[in-house]
Image (tube, rainbow, N blue to C red):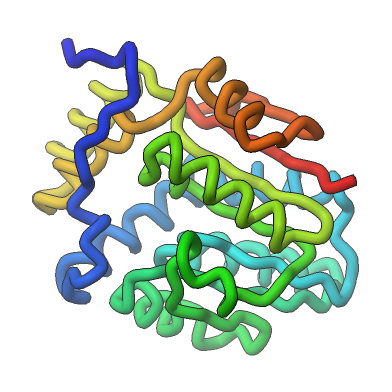
Length: 232
């Protein structure tokens, strides 16, 4: 059994921003399908209702990948007569290009290629920052910088969904990736994502060190943490 007592520091293949479209697009498409099938989009929209979201709000998805979360929000907003301004931000050119293709039918979704740690001057303020299965890519120090940047950018709050580091999830992902995909990236990054993920106490400590105190942290199936930060 791998050592899951502490967060791993190994770098995922996906963290290479120079990856070609042929390698990253199938993985992003698969992640989007998983988010939809396992309730990730449903839980995100439920969290958005807590604010609540109003017409005219701007929502930014940091580390947007293939844009599946923004597409889900756009569909929900259309059904509820909400006019929202949606922006996806990702540092990988291939991810941004793929997200643009996937979102081609949605006029209220735009994308920006930018690094959310170093390019904050290029990122417009918004009402709510969201991110899904993204923050585990950062070590503790950069995680604190990331959430401080989010907090500075968001007027209303932040919604973060990420993995719970647990042995059952680790072995489940190994089994799933070996049965359903031949992608080297998926087979490597899936289990590694769990090793880089979080225990509850770690998130509480990180939030304290980032001077974030008005938040709600809950666990959701399958092995997801949902963090909602409310601005004063």
